[in-house]
Image (tube, rainbow, N blue to C red; front, side, top):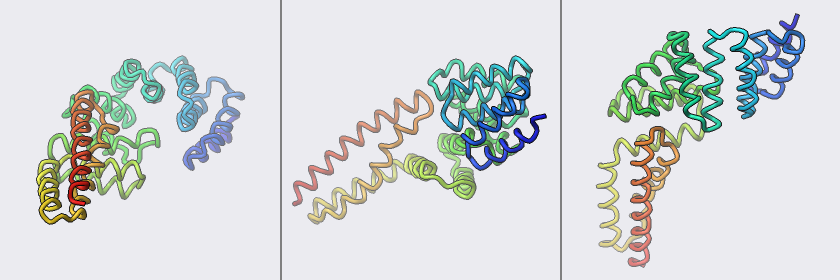
Length: 261
């Protein structure tokens, strides 16, 4: 039997050694082509290696063995999303959720698509349920924590935002996570920060001291990055418009700096 291959593959996968894990799972598949654990592990490993088309093939093999396997549809959804096929991604996510509404993986992936569709409240409930069922999601779904943060900023739920941000930073600190949280914080307090930036720019002109220009620059640059972290189409349009405004403000600050020199 191929239990040892699958077990070794799972250990390698847990250590994020995706290439090594894939070799173990492929060994298991070679011994038994219809082994669902080996096929699922291979699909997860391929996702870790960013070989999304190959992952979809493994998932399709899984579905042929058991069409009611929600994880196979979740993995396909994630892979389709990574390839830019949002329609297929949403279809597979919805299928996974319909098969098992209590699956943390299905709740996360379908919640993400609801978020993209701007169904913020429903997405928030699904993401909260997913993280309640399984706080430590697989590596390919860990963005669920950040998506949940987005829903809290949308509702201006500051208490839950800070609680979730602490959980994110405690569970897995990453540069992307820190930047994303910073961008969301600036977004929540953008109006107040805009007044601070305006006051700093005025002080720079009146006192002829360019050090005051560091304040608006410190907030403007991360706010401009919000375009890269857009989730919904409406969010992208708003962030793109504000990104253009940020560019104008940076040019204005440059002009002020040139003037006071």
